[in-house]
View: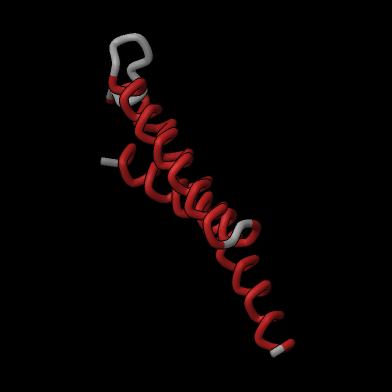
Length: 90
């Protein structure tokens, strides 16, 4: 459960970061690439070679989740400030 939640939080932070730098078609292509990479990593993580989603790594995933939450909040604040600047110009 924590592994899935951490992945969603990290993806949210990455997508917020992309929204600050890309627009239009380039944003869509970048987002599709990130989702493809996330699916590939999830499939590799479930394999016996890597085994990232085993219960042994629960504490690591908790740390990753907290770090991802901090990154996501930071990116949300950065995006908010960037969009506020556009409102002041208009």
